Length: 268
Image (cartoon, rainbow, N blue to C red; front, side):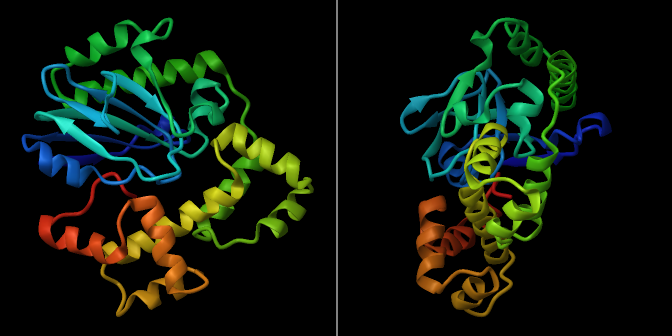
């Protein structure tokens, strides 16, 4: 299995965290390696028509699709070998790039090939020839969308996202709300429009991601260390949250890492 992260070009870095490519021939290995999509970010995936395809909860996914925030563990598998190229946006990417209310795609996806003006994109990607060329096609497409939509960013939401991510979800939302001089209802409404989920849930996902990184890095002596260092109330709260977002316990996750001998992909 080959997996690669590719930095976004400078003119897209305000909108995109990175591009990625994935190729493999073992469907079972791919199912294990793809991992959880609960990372606080929406994304886009193109699956090359000459290879296999993703299946999510027994439903075959479109050739090219845009997905929103994922807030629960979902089963990802593949039918046959897979060659895919993807985009991971910043948390507010659906609004800032596509101009859509991010909440409309939370735990859902949309087939880009069926939307007006998108019909040529799958063909361009299928004939691009290489991963580098596919990323160039996607970059041009996304830049065009940004230019067309001319979405005015919400500096308050952007600030809130940066504070929550920077603190790994531990910043006080009440203090943040007071600093931004917003009512709780207004803060949550604007955050959901741009990010797709509530500030509280986004904070929990950032906290989970920090604990996941620590677990993957093997930077702990016992699980209670991870719980304590990531501001969980106790070890049982950490384990319950981890299982909610990953679909397995921290012990099972570590065993999977040991068995595959590689990192779980697409979990930041």
